[in-house]
Length: 210
Image (cartoon, rainbow, N blue to C red; front, side, top):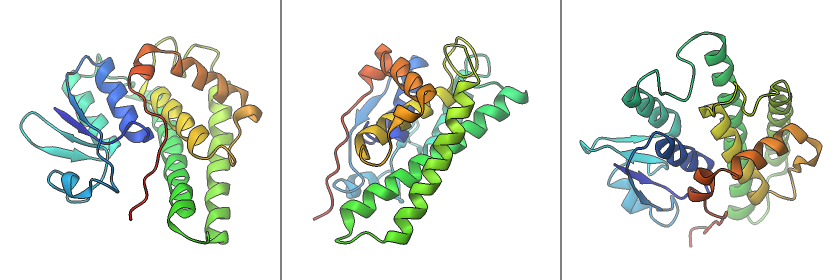
């Protein structure tokens, strides 16, 4: 299998971490959606990352679809999410919050990089959305005294939350300070201390189109 995308993306990174935890062998192509769009287009007509190319050459884009495919491959007993019930619903709620905050944070980065003058109304809206999501995520994380959100085993919700927090800290340090959100800060530190997070990692960089 081939995983396309750079690990400074919280979405690409979550896939790489999940695949590693599942013991899946894959090649990593760190192509940028900006600089390597034509390469990505051979597999994804949307030129989006992450894209996972399966062994039968089928290519799947968007991390939620990729993660669902991986879970189907390993089966419900190994999947990093509850198969049903309250824990699955709560995990999906947290994943949606973290993914939404990540999307809006990426939008803020693009607004800063791609425009000579940022659109104030859009920036304010994105910041408000991210701040609200982080507040909700802080509450959710603080309600669990366990090592991870749903006990002693790491879940997809834990992974995406951590990869997003790393992205926000590096890409938008002047905007989002985790010092006021201690549960999230502790979660990030715990996750980034794991060998798999250190192996599937890349400092944030952005190379705008020329």
